[in-house]
Length: 198
Image (cartoon, rainbow, N blue to C red; front, side, top):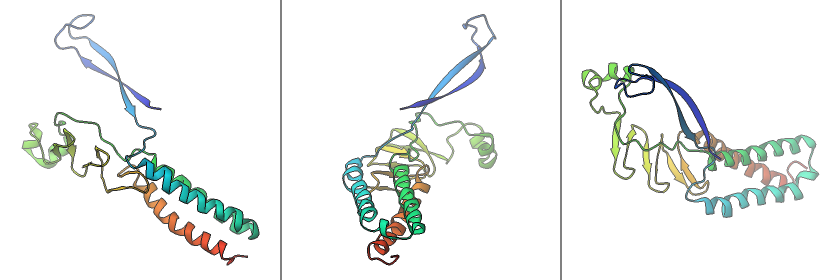
């Protein structure tokens, strides 16, 4: 489900048409939607190939090899396999850094105005924001439109069919953990199934 964040802010009613007369301050609640769970365009690959491979190999190892090894190796195997499943869930079902559509150039911040000089301070479009025709939105430097996901993603790296989604700023740590744990778990499963720890 979507959860919202509420912020309160006050502003001056300069036109005087507000409740209570001219110049009064009003408090306005702003609700922003936060994405909790999301799946990408390659969700069939994720649910029909990646998850069955991960769970199938893990289940095969759990039934055939894990009961016959020292408890220390059982614990290590459980931690690694649990970490692999957690990392896969984290990368495949987490917001990769999807940006909201921005129709107007955001005003430069004070820090950005100081860095870019007088042009940015006067509100001109600085080099930090670029228009994306595909997304019909402004995007900051480093954010790229992903045609597979059809959204702008912060610090976009690539679209991974195995995880079913785009890889960006918010799911990159989980993706790196997933890639590392796939390799480690595969080696561990091979060693367990061949009886190296028996």
